[in-house]
Amino acid sequence: MEVIRIGSTNSVLVIGISDMQVSDDSNAYLKTYSLGSCIGVAAWDRDRQVGGLLHILLPESSIQPSKSDSHPYMFADTGIPRLFHALYDLGASKSSIVVKVAGGADMKSTGNTLRIGERNLNCTRQILERNGVRIKSLQVGGCISRTMTLQLMTGKVLIQSPGREDIWM
Amino acid sequence: MSELANVDPRIIESIDHIQPPPVAVTKLIQILAEEFHTDEVIDILQTDPALTAAVLKRCNTAFFAQRGGVSSLNQAIQLLGTSTIMNIVLEITIGASMNGGLAKYGIPQSGLRKHSICAAAAARELTKYCSILPFTPDTAFTAGLLHDIGKIAINEVLSEKEEALKDESPEPTQSNTEKERSLIGTDHSEVGALILNKWKFPPFFAAAVGEHHDPTPGNQLSHLIHIANWCAHSIGLSFGFQSLSDELSPESLSVMALSESNVEEAIIDTYNEINSKFKSILTDEPL
Image (cartoon, rainbow over all chains, first blue to last red; front, top):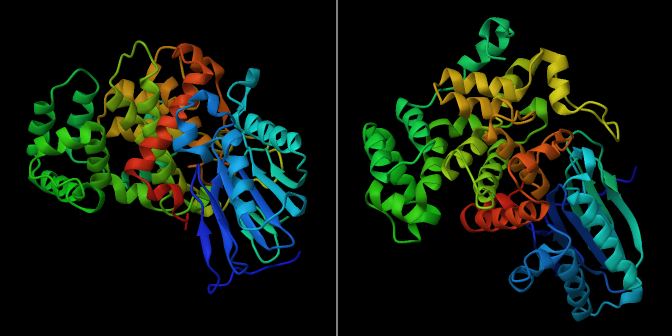
């Protein structure tokens, strides 16, 4: 297993729930904690070494349209387009953006009640597919929470969960 | 489980190690369960001068001081509301117990506190979508805050079975609650009820904590906490080994007459509440 250490000299930008950050600092890491049913979308331009990380809480802004302006990163349908446009502003181009997705866990339930993790993932997939963007790798589902870190130098993404081996994707 | 005689003696011993809150807190929980006047809250708090002083001190630090500060309990309640005051009271009285890490669960330091605050906020936000409630929103908040307190006692008992709750399989066959039962014959919800009964909290309140993973039709508070706990895990204030492994009961939605849209809206409201009052728990690193 390849091990990449996050050095203390590197800057780590923490992205909260319903938030997003992009950076063109190739020494930086973008990190978001505890993705439960939420989805983390890491997008990185392999030519420009710029990237962004989005922490989505819910799939569709139609549940509370007023929030789509004040908290656009809360929802997949309003957050994902903004992530891409923020990267374009940093010089990224769609054809060279690599996307990795994590999160989307759900508690077990009979009758498919409140499968928000699954719905978050489906909505994310649909939006990306509709826009011709392929997801390169996924760490999704199950019953674990995940912390996700994007290394801007390489585009590699680290997934950490309590009691589990670290995964680089 | 209500008979202490049937409980593993190690659990009883570990419950005794948890510092109980002062009498004033038990009285506050009792009056908040029904219609109450803020004067009653003030009267009870004032019976404990040390607690009153600590509450006012907390109200005048950090976030709260930015709103001009407070000089009396009445002002504090008017400005912050009884739920926030209750949160402060519980942080002062049992916060040290709630803030530690629970290594046997894989829960980092402050993880239990963060999850509990989120469940508490979710419980109160969910009450806004319930047409009939046999308890107050403040009771819902407080029950959410204390719903996992049993984990503190179990974590101590499991000290010789390091990481016994850890399951690295992709799809664990047992939930965390089932693992607890197989290890020590009880689970954290039942142990939580034992703790709150010992502290003389209202029986329906202790029962709701005791049933929050397996709610019974007669106790609506247990159903609400069941959903609020799910909200906190869903939002991501979810810590420890396979933290989403317990089952969500769809029956709880129908008992509380809540739609899935109501719950999604409550999740947004909960996020906003936390973002305005407890923002650091959304970005702080779990240690």
